[in-house]
Image 1 (cartoon, rainbow, N blue to C red):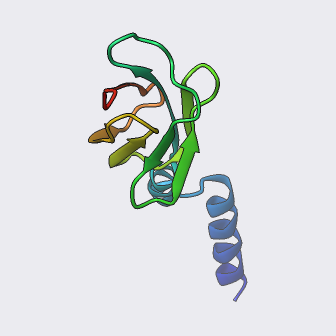
Image 2 (cartoon, helix red, strand yellow):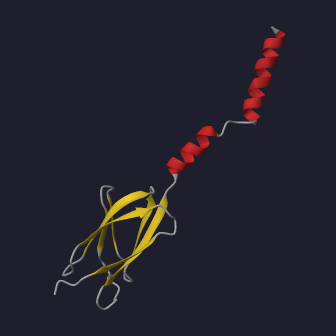
Amino acid sequence: MKSILTSILFLSITLMVFPSDGNKNLSSAADMTIDVKGSVQDSFTGESLAGVLVRLENTGYTVYTDLNGNFEFKKVTPGVYKITVEYISYESFSKEYELNNEKTRLCINLENKN
């Protein structure tokens, strides 16, 4: 009986000192997110466009560009996403992007309808 208790105690201490990290790698990969930044400009003049709607389709993420034409989606799970951009008197823009790098920066040019 004493040897069984000693074995259980030794096993418990071993598990506390040397925990398995097999699941750690799986959860950290699943929990990984990135921030996606970008800007929107007029394709002809190169002027930054403020107040442009930028949507990451099928995610519920929608943002508007700031006064300098910049936008940012925070905590996006890496993957392939369709980004749709809409602005008054400009052609709508949609394109699929592979978003998998923390340094992802998109530059989107919109064409004026006129």
